[in-house]
Length: 195
Image (spheres, rainbow, N blue to C red):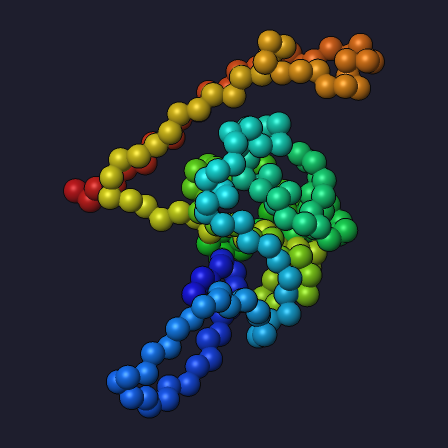
């Protein structure tokens, strides 16, 4: 059974005495239907998060861009709206812990954890539980657990006129592309050493 981040699952079953000659064969996958909570949301699984390109939303690996993979989320690099709500009126959770901002609630661009730390992500869109108090959507990030080995990655985002096309409308209007840009990053993680 798969249990996504920020969800409650219930499994009902009954044990019936049977003989040794009986076999039970399951031939179809069951559909997960949440009958305990009325909330609607979208979970972005670890496989999808890992397969995303390095360039996300034009800013380079910002985890707040993951919300635009869920239906009902609109906006841009500065403005985020869930299900037609007001800008920046969503609650942010990291590993189930609320992350309130004193100045602009729901704005996380300046304090985003590294993209590589996100294991799973969920957007709660409507009629969610009372534990989420802000009211117009919930962004819930589940961070990846550590490992007992060294690991990391290196990437570069290269934008210039040799690789990037100007696009149909920009080419016709004569507007030049933005200046060339190269961004390189590296991440490294290691086992915890207690000395």
